[in-house]
Length: 283
Image (cartoon, helix red, strand yellow):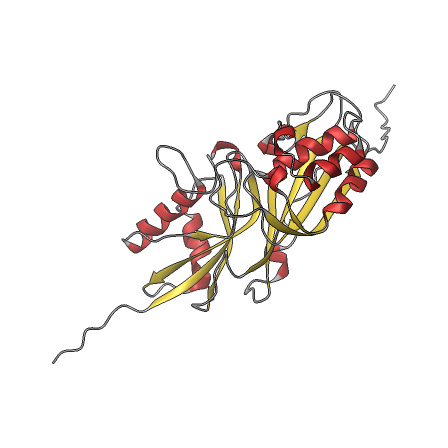
């Protein structure tokens, strides 16, 4: 009796960057451009068959990623570490695979993740800036107090039911989130807000930022902001911050096969120098 030899599969992990501007989010969907579908199509062209790409998180339309993580099952002789270079030759310019590596069959991009970290960037100068606009929310309506915003973030640390920041349409059965870090830092006209959690609710960060700027601008009292989410008053959360200011900064794992420089801090912070330069051509 002849033995049937099934092709041996191996699991490949990817660290992915993308500019979310022209994508309708990470997740594959009909009649809309998505990051997942672009990469799956490229893999299929190489392997000759379709694979499913499992991502660590599902970013919304217009949201960027500095170090999204995903994995897929492959057969054939291509070494795992070669996939990044090969895929980049097939992918559009707004997606980049920073690195690829082999992982154990039990390792999962989503379920093995210990945390996700997002950064939201606000640009507060009166005049717009073409080079800042694709990656920040130009908030010039009122001055923002970053210290007050940081104070508002502190009570969020720990495990809470954040139903107030949970958009409708999610299949998640609960709204409990463990917030591990939350900070607000000003750098000249830019305010960077970073939030790290074990997982994020659908639309959570943009809804939270939308309310946080009301605190920073003085339009919402600090105590009211805290009571709003503690009492789960979702009906009062009516505005989400625009998507272009949000970026999935990184995903953390206890057993990650990539060196830190590949995934840890790959999104440069927008900075406008406050230095005054004088040249010999100045009057």
